Length: 419
Ligand code: HAM
Image (cartoon, rainbow, N blue to C red; front, side, top):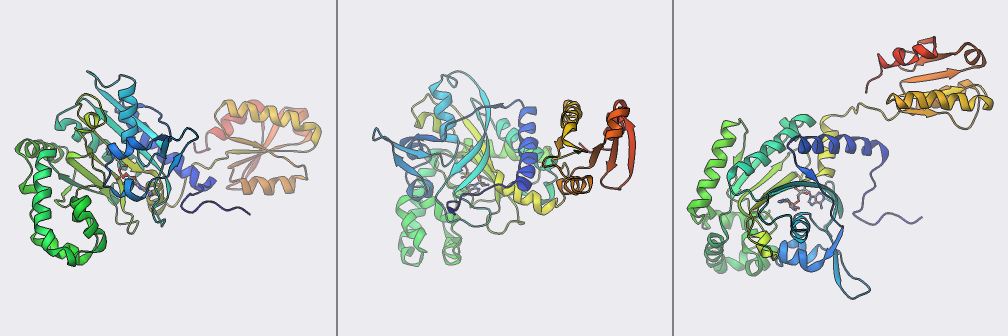
């Protein structure tokens, strides 16, 4: 048997049910904040990501799925959605002199080392907003995330970490200071950090290596280099979050792994998933549109990892309500199939999810299938019922059985079926 490619996951029906619940809840919140859905291609020119995400990031250096198509163009499966979103809105003239609030969902691809919560194909729900300079947008994005956690019943399981990394100019100055500090200590740094010293030194702050972290204790602090405007932006954001009652921790080491960020950056993390604890992350990227060839336009957004949220949801809410079948229709013999299908169709029009038995067999066998399907109700259509215009309803939870008229059927089951 051919097996799935490493890092590419199947989402089986049981998990897909939870997945749907999570995605519907999150996109429902996004719509309630009047963000509009858009859809973006999975393949883009490689250059979009190297220019947008940054040449020296892990994503571009070693994680992209890149191929040459038949015309010789270098294309890549998207590793994230922000660059594509900017490309698309720009290409369709939807950024110039306008504001936009959009969201997208779907798979992203990164050649990472697979483990629990980290896959090579994973799914994100991303939200992006353009044309808003002030911290009120940053506040909205974070309150919207808090609303996701509330509706998913996850508020007590996630924490918000925040930082400001300043404008590009202040970061360049900081970068120089950091390199000057670390260069003499180069030999003591872990291998990745040594490499990053010349490619992307700020990522060293994120290093998980303990020796490197100890060396960083005396390093210049990013906060000392952040420009006044950026600090004012950040202070205003924090004040609004305090006012809104949103708890957060300022993490001065938080820099994020993509190059396009400016000013605010944030991550929502959980302790419940081991090392892959970041469930949602984002920030401002006021320079990205210009960097990709457009007119300078402020932007900010985030993306949540659906796979991780689903894992967390499963841990916190083990029971999954909302089974996929409400009603299972059993019928005495083949000649009654049409009647069984009509009965099912009427219930489907009333939003019940109905399966009609297939494959024949006696009622005992059919009821066993009904039980196994997870349905709450079995409907039994025998010869007598057909003549009388009735149906026998078996409550598969209690075992109670009652014969009701066709007209009374809906009322009988709708009063007890959970939606
Ligand atoms: P990111 O931090 O690279 O940011 O990814 C966002 C989220 O996607 C992560 O916090 C995580 O939950 C999930 N994720 C990332 N990689 C994997 C993986 N290999 N397996 C499972 N889940 C994963 C971005 O992608 C930015 N585009 C976010 C953004 C939008 N910033 C501004 N706007």
